[in-house]
Every structure is written in C-alpha cells, then in structure tokens.
Image 1 (cartoon, one colour):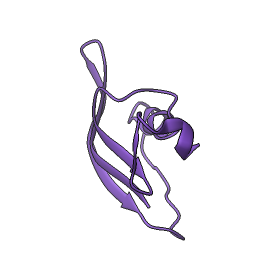
Image 2 (tube, helix red, strand yellow; image 1 turned 180 degrees about the vertical axis):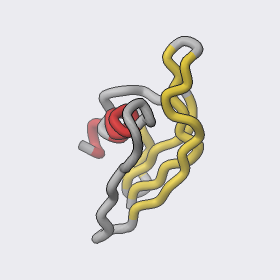
Image 3 (tube, helix red, strand yellow; image 1 turned 90 degrees about the vertical axis):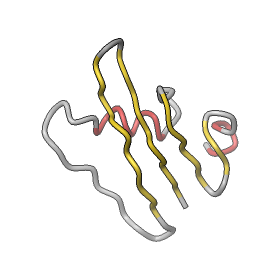
Image 4 (tube, one colour; image 1 turned 30 degrees about the vertical axis):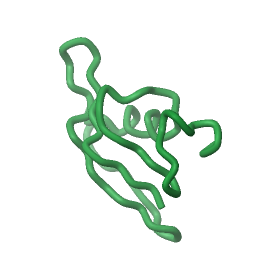
Length: 73
C-alpha cells in the first residue's frame, strides 16, 4: 500500500504541491490528471525518491521515505 499524508513541495516561495493526501491499495491503478503546472510530475518524483518533499510523509508497505528509499526501490 502507498500512503501519502500532507505531502507538500516548495521551490523557494512557489508551492508546487500543496498538502496532498491519498492511499493506493494493492491492485489499484492511480492516474494523476490536471493542467500543466498542477504538480503531477513533482508528486511522482517525490514518490520515486528523486525529490525530497518540503513536508509530509510518504510510506510504501509501512516503510517511510526518505529513510527507507533504497529498501522501497
């Protein structure tokens, strides 16, 4: 299961992702839809460990990022 709680990403004063919360259970398919600049790519980069969130928590199978990013990969 993927859990995201209050995920936020700032670039200086610009808020690219603002307090996202979601859960994805095994077998579910997730699609991120929105206009250009909505934070879709930034969210995926945080989920893959490429970007570190400004605040919030990402966990995969009860392993928290960024502490367990290598185990999650």
